[in-house]
Image (tube, rainbow, N blue to C red; front, side, top):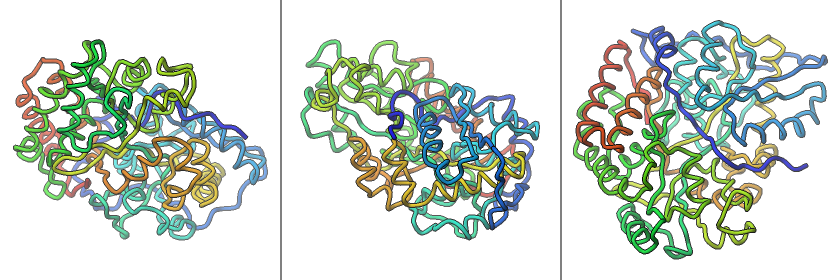
Length: 470
């Protein structure tokens, strides 16, 4: 059966809405991140499933993978559970966080499986909003089938250090959709071979812009909203050898804005920003895709799960067929610098603590089914990005899109943000200040110093101990 293609806007969107944040994060003040959470435990064995008609509801933001998941699950899961209907409720990405956590705060949800960003987990766990599924995972999921970092990123709390999973930590979710940035480049303008280093990429983009009037050298996320500007800076920070914080000491000031961090901000504002289009200071996923599709960018950066629409002739001026577009567009892993780090994207699926018991049982059964090797390969063929190692290496995944090999190659290079309940306040501070620097409202050094000082104040005022590793 055909499923919707992975096209258009959207991906791992992290929101920072102040009113909700204060309520949810302060509830955990004074606790150690390593302390036991208040999350209720799911049973190790799936309870008896109902034979009555049941609707299993997800909540996600509105983008093609959400619609693909609904179509896929209703086509495949219902072969085993014909009495079950899958409904993926969607909201605008700007409302995603609040749409879930407002209901969590009321202890009543109209969804059974919230799809959380990796940074949302700490907030949900410390407030008891989702089930602890550690015992369920031990009995039903082959954890050795996954890259340990992906398993940790989409389900573990507290988080482990990048590339490591703490087997003693609890799990609150399982992978649903993986993601990272891909570099999109115009083969017809810069050649078939993509730049290999970040500095080379900047030089190539500069020459391309000079040689092709009306085409900007670069297109990337700059908006003050979601995690747009923050992910851009964090990516450059990692490339130039910087760190977002010291997770063990919860120290940001003096770490983020050290020499490496300042160099990264200088490169972003003074070398990369001049190569972007006028008026691009509020660009996010849609705007970057539009610039590429309209032939207005030499090199662009976007999330893989949001890149499928670039191959649709109806959305592109680069060709009238997919093949013609691919003659001009190339997809590559990010260039390296002092490191080869890339941003972690993607989301996990969890079980609402306030869902009816029959729906919770069905949710656990769905998760067990979804993580099977054969289903993960089918999900990959349908446009999903799996996390099982065997599915990532499968022809079903690698042949489904020209950027899928990019994802498989990028997994060992991933770095995430801070996985702490204070996340949304931290990302809001960073978005605001990076966007201000990109738009000339603040000097780069001042913006970075302000980020470090304000973020440190958030962590210090929380009274928490422990990390939330990268």
